[in-house]
Length: 587
Image (cartoon, rainbow, N blue to C red):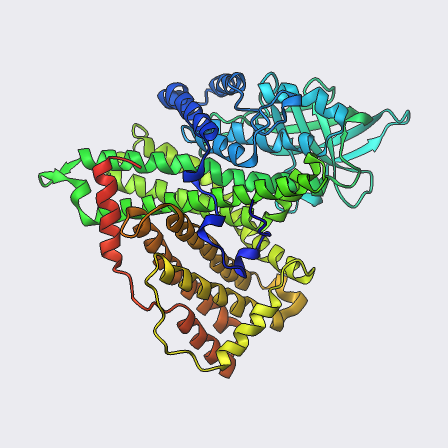
């Protein structure tokens, strides 16, 4: 069991054996993966055209089949009708179910995540007994009603209000919600409203049959076209007092923790989509002939394939690393005497920084993959008759829901700073040590990089110094006003994201693969790209707030900390990766 704390990757050197990846799946997890993938290949992919033509009934029918297979209740304990599997398995189910179609992926994610987890994590025993068995088996579906016309990222500013009835038996709710996934067929709604003049929102469980509940028409969307998305209206809606979820004024906490889970699950939901886009692209490039040869033989196409494959490898590495960290934290808390319900909450909350990192990185890179897929297909990629056009449109929502990527970038750094301020994470001592290191004379001894991945790990250690140097100096300058420096926080977030994902790929490679392998080439190529992005972001940040000798010293430190002893041959790495996957015919 790994007892790593959330955000600690910045100041702790991990051994490869301490991280978890796809190669570590148990036999039970492999069976789960195969079952979900077989379902998608049989029931979902052949019906792609129906999903693109707003066949909401098909989405609902597919969800019911997933319920019959047990795939809606992977995270729900057995006593409530679920499979009671660990966090890694819930990520794996989300990964494999979501790859075939964006509409089904959205319905699945909304139901199993934000539609079910608030009851599992915050519900009373009576509420769990009443609602979870139906949600776990697909007899009923869930939806989550948080967003309003004037309350998006600022969820606590919603205008939906609740007041206690005169007889004290009901809360009477008035207001509206928008962009509610599954609203067309959900039976159970998690609704957030402020009770009278409360400072914070409160959660409620609302059944579809409740008088005063009504719905708008289906939204006409860019992508995920068969995902039911409607406005939801409350007109003197009477909700029994026993359907209050959690505690009064605690709805914001429920919303945040549900979104933390949603963020890492969103990363998982993009993984198989990436794999399928890449495999389609390779297949098309192998079959498409120009100038008498397959276009997969052209360097420009091979570069795209190599970078897309690398992105999948890195996305998998970070996603399952964090998932296992969360699972281990939950187990540690349960062993310490905490209830499983509270342990789940605290386990995910502990790794909220990593959840935001993954949400941003994987949804960004999935959009890039779909865009490159269109480019490889050329004119055919722009046609709705080819799979890339729908993949590109469906991928676009990933950067918006579960909190926009901009919000999540700011959140990741902000949460890290708060951990440091609370004394949960000592970032100050290493930041001060780096300041002293910059004043000292660098060592000119040639390091020993004979061990596999040793230079890459040494470079990642130095990249962490870049983050601590920039973030530490910025925090010292702006103190409590740092939250207003959004440009600077976005730069810091890019550095943070690249470090976590690059380290995940390098450790995955060191643990499971050999020197000279295609996986080693992908880890090295990704690290090279990460270094370049970190240099750009760090330099932009440094010159924005430092001047004179301080600026010169920090820029000198940036050059020192991003320096390779032996520069990788990027074109050779790219060709090695491309050759492997072109010959294989897919990912």
